[in-house]
Length: 184
Image (cartoon, rainbow, N blue to C red):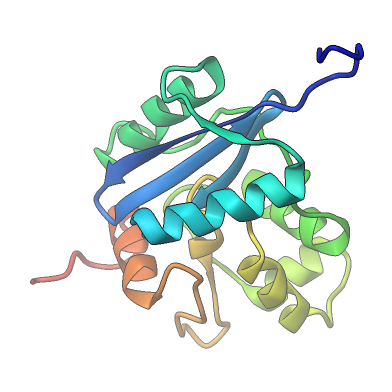
């Protein structure tokens, strides 16, 4: 609590090196709130500025804090093949409405090593004509990798888009055995 007895938002962050490059992980007291790809210094600084603005809290680098320590452990285990599912509290405050509904369905309904089409995911949330809106939801996912938007593909087998870049999507799908590992 702050000096006025109000609940103070705490926002902690760290950067984890992974097989797809550095990932920024940010968490609040409620849980993991953001994962950002390609977290070089400039990308990290922009992401932290956006989070501070959206959440009204100054980000503090605290890799050993309880909400981050477990997230780091699980992310590292995922990238070394020791974990297939994430079991973390998630803070959904950066997303709402249809997008949140779609992402929650994705998180609970599309397991490791499987993919789903945009249209199939739209049907799962009761909006069969909303495949393009599902694409928008994937693009606004504040928790990529943990909420596995890389598992959403086009119905004709195409990769579709991906906020982390198509090469990152390919590498994540190869890690999960959906695609063959690249030769180079």
